[in-house]
Amino acid sequence: MNKETTQIVKELFASPQKIVIVGHKNPDGDAIGSCLGLSFFLESMGHSTTVIMPNDFPDFLKWLPGVDDIIIHERETNKSTAQIKDADIIFTLDFNSLDRIGEMQSVLEESTSKFVMIDHHQQPADYAVATYSNVKMSSTSEMVFHFMDAMGQSEKLSKEIAINLYTGIMTDTGSFRFSSTSPTTHRVAAKLIEAGAESAVINQNIYDTNSPERMKLLGVALNNLVILPELHTAYITMTQKELDDHNFKKGDTEGFVNYALSVKGIVFAAIFIENKQESIVKISFRSKDDFSVNDFARNHYSGGGHINAAGGKSSQSLNKTISEFISILPRYKNELTHAS
Image (cartoon, rainbow, N blue to C red):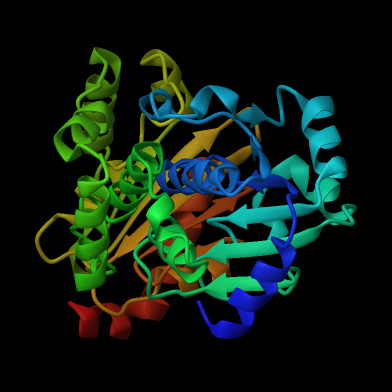
């Protein structure tokens, strides 16, 4: 974090503040971990904090320290709105555009609070008085660790903060497998372990919680896998019926797209998930090397993210969405071939 941003935040913290911390819609491990970790840190500095998520999150994250105090906006809209209106400062974590928070967007846009952004996605919007943005960082949770250090408060790293930040880093790096994992990421992880984050326990709590229904759903996903070898692309489809038949819960398809990317010779992978309730098809993209799924998602599916991990959506039917996707791919054949 640069000196100018650090100074702005320190001035905001000159006296105890009422702070709201917001994560993105459909929060993942990094959104939950970074928000809770920051909350514990700011509370230790004497501030009052409230963590708000636009909607619910997967059960495998509901063991984290502080999770019971999170307000879910879609369930407690009045309470959430009141907290936002009463806030002195609003931190937005793990997203960089207010259109990433669904129904909360209008509430935040109407707020007169001072905004601070901490995020590692590309092309941040300009709505915050202090923006800490670094697309090379592994995760927003790693950035919260560096934020603490920039504030000169690294000694406040507690076990609760460490567990949350380690969880965010671990999940957003695919257990330290993705290219965004740097030597610094490992050094930060080591410090978090020293502060009380038990890596084996966290791994078990995150990854060893599969229900029989989720495992069978994975079988359906793999059976639906389509490989386009000439385009170095693979994709998976999931219909609403397939989800319903396996008692789908939020987070059950987490990581499925990575199986498509793991196929030998594949550079670009996608999963298309039908969501009848929202009348959309939710899409996750993954890639290898320098093929930018961030650009692909922004150009075609009202989405975005990172170079190698992004998301988007389609308002067309699942079949039309797939047909369109296949029709677009030849435009990228040279890039996909070069990257393979």
